[in-house]
Image (cartoon, rainbow, N blue to C red):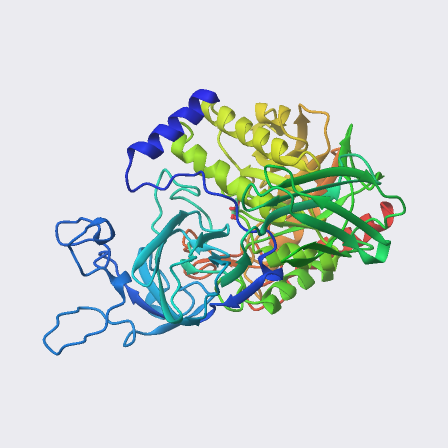
Length: 609
Ligand code: GCB
């Protein structure tokens, strides 16, 4: 591991323009800070040749002292003879947050660079610090303020920020983002996925004004395995000692006063009895205030425990069955990424209507707001990083990237009671380098947060009619969690599913992280006809019968709540770039299999009361 770290450092140092994965994690609870929204209409320029980034010798403009022409300059012609071959003001606009693919027909399949620009007014105050914060940009972002580069970031689903103190102008400012969603083999995810590679500034953008020694991060959660031992930690942005900070939970009459240590930190574990614990049935959240001389941050935090004992999953000490469903960060009605809180509520309400108590937010970090809504609406969450299928297991830079994305996810969502599982990846193929990569990720997750479960969606292999789970990664994670597609990718009819049984090596709770099959909403035929609702319905019925053969079954998360867009899905009649495994169609219409699952979940709810 040490060797790996050292080589990452060397790789970062040796490549001038590369992006080193040692960024500071994003500001905790940005919504509760003094923020100015930079959402709205941004002008954009499509730049397939990266003409606004490289000069004609293919040298980046932003690394040249003399060459001009970079689009980030956001120049306007001042003199009639001046040659400028771009113009943001005359270019079209798109909504931010929002992927570009769903906002213009021309961009539906576009992969590459787009420049986005927004102007905004600011009045920077002395003694304050300023940050530009992005909820997510897919995939690589180069960000410029008033023509100067303020930073770069890789990773399409996690937040990041750049400090702009001293760089903001009083009055009008121009922020330019070069967003590039080109798929590359060594990235996370890699070139091959079964989802749409939506590009752009897909989540909120803010300008945050913060005091000098601001609170950059905090955590308040129950200690592992305890229902009354609260662990509170906090960090200032710098090593400022003696800062007074108070923690209050008015409803509990809880008030604690602290002073930061020489590292600008606070950390305490204390007993507090009579907490009402959070659960899907009773999603209790407390208003928490964290105050310093210059800040008052309000959060809503729930407290609960989650652990594995033998083959049971215990939520607040009581055995639970995960009545799950998977979803992508996609609104099928928009045919694009979720943009608003309304979109998110709709998706989560659909999961609630199905009587789920659990959601798998596949296959990458979803919006922070999703986790907050899951907290509020009472849904347990499986949160994941896009370590998906074939990754460059032996490339230390790729590993550093995966680790950073996992770190950022955990850092962002560690105060959310809903989140109970950190998933380190999906369907990764067995090999020694992969085992070491994944084991290190599992270790990272545990070292950052020992209060939640660590898992991955594994694969089974088959010997005649037995599905065998013996992936050595199973040793390192808390659940026997795996995908299986009996009746769809193997077997040629739903009835064949019934012949399978299982050979599972580990004595841990079993959670089926995927099963399913495609059905085109509204297409009806007999149950042996592929793509029909009847086929999918029979597949679900027989899957549920087959899965009941697993004594340690503690949850299922069928694939998937709604149809979703995927370039891999090309059948001209049934798919047309839609993966049709949704229990609901792209218009939100429930397919027949929906009712099979709903019925099963109603029964499981009774059983686990
Ligand atoms: C899987 C993947 C998921 C796909 C699904 C499918 O195993 O994990 O991302 O979309 O199968 O539909 O094939």
